[in-house]
Length: 136
Image 1 (cartoon, rainbow, N blue to C red):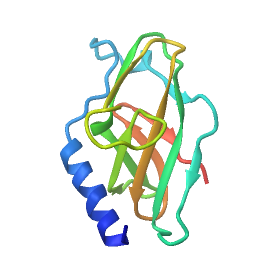
Image 2: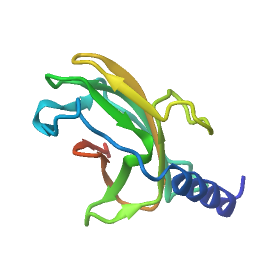
Image 3: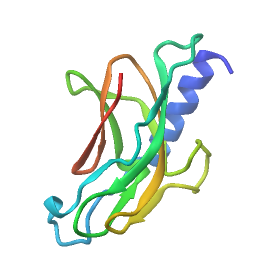
């Protein structure tokens, strides 16, 4: 796939996925939710596409209540807080369609997360009120 085709595909999926909600159990208490990397995630940057990256790993709910996460609400931000075009799925690998768009994690439970983006300098992944660091 050419770089242009990859960018168009990523943007098309991102536009189609807009509207995700990441929330706790509905009471608005974001402090009760805490999602962390369960194990160190892996970052892959194709040598032919140095501005593109894929990050995959496993997230864990370290909070006190169940949390529902949606892939459409996932944002990737650079060091200045600018949003990078990105797509995410709660799967061990990216798959188009409805698979992996939402996940509900009870306290202590884990789920896979795969995020792909275009653009340099990604620093954090925002899941609604929750944030995960991007390793370097």
